[in-house]
Image 1 (cartoon, chains in turn green, purple):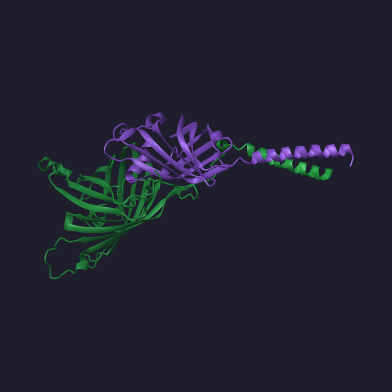
Image 2: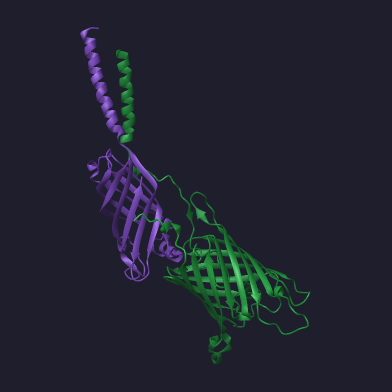
Length: 300
Length: 187
């Protein structure tokens, strides 16, 4: 009998000891064990570096109305008010289908072009559960030049007026101050002037963002053309991104006039050496068309 | 059986009962936990609505001591507008530098709550709130609702944005200088 009590007593003491550990529960001392996914955001301030696509997408359910302006060449002098007398523009609408997939359409006054694109973020830079050091996106662009060509013996098909661009964007945000992007690009013309000109052109873009203050960033974008179309220059643009609440304002100087991939990468007529540069600006205004689902079931 | 061994037995029995009793009271200590609490804040100043929600509030409390913690990833706040969300993280909360916001404190009137009885109990919570790397003593009132052993804590309070070292051009104008925060955690 006593033995039974003794063993029960022992068990109870054991139980107490277990409880004693339970009693020292200190939530404050607990380290959070859950390492959650931390997606890198804001590598660039908006979806374009200057002319070219950046790694950023517009959010899901968000419509971005963009107006891009490019003035005439600064070196025309005072008579043309340093190029401000002339302007070409592109009006466009971009929409985020999901947080990784966006589409956009646009119309440029320059060569009366229509364009449309799809951008898909395949890999997102992140830390936490997984460490991914860079983001990768694909951009596919179709451009239709509706400007009537001079009448020749050849009657062009509609498809002849199309050109396409494919880009893979590799971007890394090193810190809040600096992000870098590499953009290998393939441009395809459905038709070119003569048999000696290839239909496909490769180029490599490089762009970066450098933060100056919380609201001001310097951006630079350059495309090195591996295959060169004779008579044109490599595009180089330097800009400033200014954030003002609901929109981002981009001001820049560039040697390109066109605002579609075909025209600014492959057909840039201005030369930095000759001072054939243009002022330009991009204005973006976003509208929320679909609220994020998180905001739909509020418990308050 | 002689008297001595009888007495020993009785004595052991009493000790045993006492011990069992102690064990059981100690067992009543329970941790309530959730990883999917909801927190909502509104800092609407002039014109534009500035509000966001985070559905991944990590919270725990202990019924015996009233100790309570809340933790949240700043980047988990969802705004209606992506751009606003980027500005919130980059320019105001500096969330790469300060990824988490948390609260550590006590439900000071935890003893008034009868965990075996369903109902809504008013609670007083005192503790330290850390946002943007700055810790401030905070106290607020809330409600703890018990239903079939499940607890829900709801409450609201407000914080002065400047108290937490958050600066920016628009605070006090487009952004309210005081943000109201609402919380709902189902454990």
